[in-house]
Image (cartoon, rainbow, N blue to C red; front, side, top):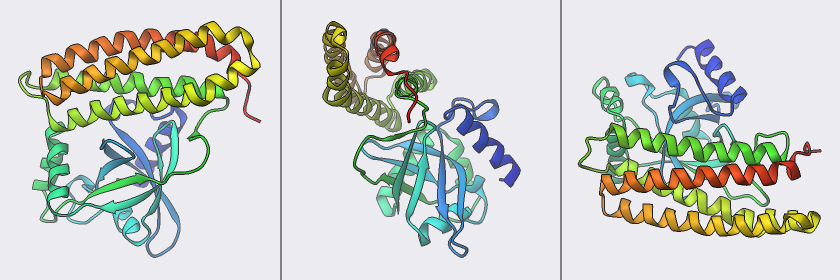
Length: 280
């Protein structure tokens, strides 16, 4: 893509925490920063991605079906350590090119979710690479693009809201009789993300707030109960996904959406007044 076009996407992505307008509205995009293979200069590019469960995502070096691999792909071959921006989180990752059956299965999932990937492959003789970006674990809390802990909570909550909206849209686009492999991964990735977030709150954030705000006790009890309820709903969604029943999955997504929305609203009502202190 032309540099100016890419830069406009990058600027909007960063200014609006991953939300984009126009043709990329609702798209799964991240910003990938690589180190130039020849120059050593850092370069950032917006790329589409696929959730892959656990601690990695997949990016596809399609270059719109160009006969040549994109520059960012050559860069990460030379320097596999990259920086990923999701719009809310920024983290370092190790890039690993997938090969053989693993690559083919991942690309098939991508095509199932968006036939445009197949159109790109048809336009070129090269085999379009699929790359796994595995987050490199670090000590301490994640890096969130927020000015205060309160804003961080709002942004993380918005990630879950947006992901549920994407999953609902993906279910609606399906043919009604099957539950696609990538959609199943998306659901399971969401469930894991909710578990990790709530576990972090229960173990670290809530005790921290309770020590400083004795009046938080009753709200904490309710929030912990709601975390347990969300975990039950996530497990029901996992079961529906494992049976590959789209009707059951849709029903569980709707149920999870309704109860999670109410939980997030209550949590923001209780936590934000305690957290709206700018980060020093």
